[in-house]
Length: 77
Image (cartoon, rainbow, N blue to C red; front, side, top):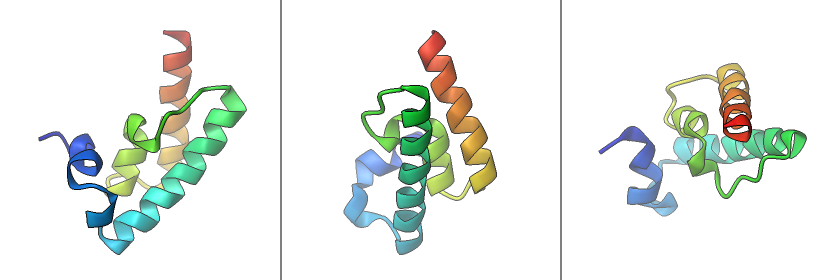
C-alpha cells in the first residue's frame, strides 16, 4: 500500500487526532493555493504534498512549496 492511499483506505474517522489536525491544516493551505492559482482541487487527497504533510513527513513551509509546485505542474501538463 502506498502512503498516499492511507486516507482513502482507512477513512477520515480512523485518523489520529494529530493526523486530523494536520489534514485540516493541509486542506486550508491547499485550498488557498488552489484558489490563488485557479486550480480546481477535488480534495486534499489528490495533492501528494498534502498527504505527506498529514502523515508528518514534511513540515508546513515545505507543504506550501511542494503543493504550489505540484499544482503548477498539473496546470501546465
